[in-house]
Length: 117
Image (cartoon, rainbow, N blue to C red):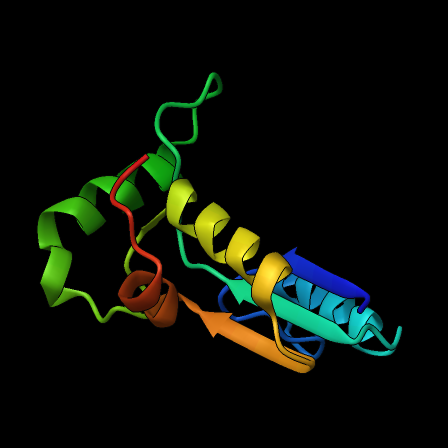
């Protein structure tokens, strides 16, 4: 069985006006057309992978707020650890059923969460 798992993005949409989300959506579309037996699209929100070597002030502010507001933020938009995303991707690659599956951020947090990176 030919399987493929893509780390895409929350809001991926080939018709988006946002270049990043449009590119992610177009990539998802192109992969779907390739005929994989199993295709899993993982759509995380803001990734929490720990400190980065480069400064990313917007990302840092989002993570800071996300960690402090926690349950006040809908699960769809909460930061998710890179470890959780990796776990979901690995499990999908090893155990995916035929067809296309989409794992949105809230499902990542509820079904695969292993804490912060």
